[in-house]
Length: 230
Length: 213
Image (tube, rainbow over all chains, first blue to last red; front, side, top):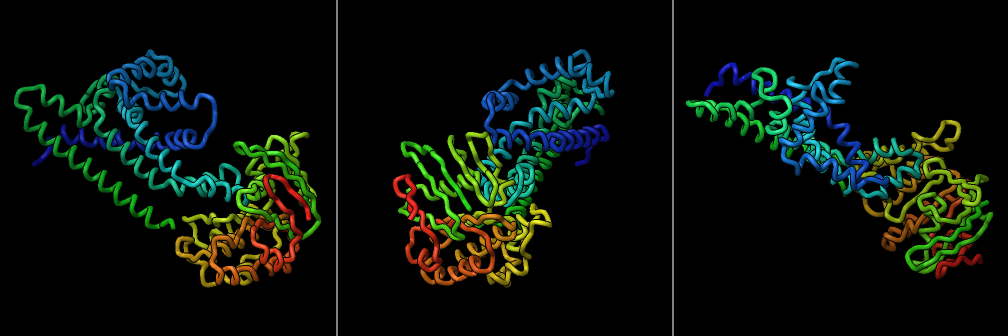
C-alpha cells in the first residue's frame, strides 16, 4: 500500500495541525482545569458550561461561530490581522484553531479530574512550609496531575486529528493548506473510483489513532511508575 | 508567648477557645472530636474563623478586629500533621528540603545533615514516602517542618497512628526537639503518658471550650 504525493501532503498536514492544536492549547487547558477544580469564583458554572459547548454543539455550528469571529471580517479575526498579521481563514492555522477548540473540552476534563483527585491537604502542607500558591501549583499540584495532563494531551491530539465538521465549515478543504486526512477521505467518497484512496487514508488514520492511544497508555504508566504513590 | 482566641462554627458545634501561655511546650489535651485539630489549623492560618486573634513569636498573625490575616505561607509555622502528608512524588531528601528552599538564609537555624542525624533518617534519604513505615513517615514529617526553621511548631497527634513500639521509638526524638531547639511547640494529644513524658503545660479542650490548667 503506497500513498500518492497528495495523500502524503494530507497526512503531514493533519499531523501538523493536530500537534500545533494540542500543544498550544495545553497551557490554557491546564489553567482552565485548575480554575474549575480549585477555584471558587462567581460564574464558575457558566465557565464550565461554556468550555463544554464544543462537545455538545453540532460541529458545523462551532465552525460557523469561528468563521463569524475569527474570519477576515470577524471582530477578532480582523483585529488579529491588522495588529499582528495573523490570519486564520482558509489557512492551516485556522484548521489548527478549529481542532484546538473542538479538542479543548476533552483535554480540560482529563486534567481537571486528575487535579481533583489530588489531596488538597498536600497543598496545605506545602503552604505551611512557605510555598505561595504559584509554587504549590508548580511543585505539588502539577507534578501529581501529570498523568492526567499526558492523557489529556494525547486525547486532544487524537480528537484534533479526526476533526472534520468545524474545520471544513471554518476553513474549507483546500488541498495542501486545509485539507486534512478526514477531509481528503470525504472528498474521495464523493467521486467515482475514490474507494481505494478512501481506504488507504482510513488505514493511515486508524494506525495513527492506535499509536496515539498506545503511546498515551505507556507514558501514563511511566509517569505513574516514577512517582508511585503510597 | 502564644495567645489564641477565636470562635468558630463547625456545623452545629461552636468552638470557643481562648488561652495564652509562655510555656515552651503546650499540650492541647482532650477527647477526640473536641476541636483540637481546628485550634492548630487556626494557628497555622488554614482555617479562618469569623472572629479570631492569634499572636505567636511576637507577631500578630490573625486579628479579625484589625483585618489582619497573614497567609499560611508567610507565618513560618511548622506543622506536623497527624497523617504525615509527605509529598509522594518527592524523595525523603527532597521532602526534607522543601520548606528550607522558601526560608531566607538569615532565618535558617539548622542544616539538613544535622536534622537527618537527629531524627535517624540517614538510611532513608533516597526513598520515596510510599516505602516508609508509619514511624519513619512521622520522623520525616517532623524533619521537614523543622528544616523550614519555624518560629513555632505545631504537632497534631504525631504518634496517634503508630503502634506502642513505634511510639516508644519516636517519643524520644520529640523530647530531643524540645531540649535541643528553643522552638515553642503546641502539641495535640489525648494521651496522658505523652504529656507527662514531655512535661508539657496543659490546655484542656472539651466540648469546644478551652480551660487552662
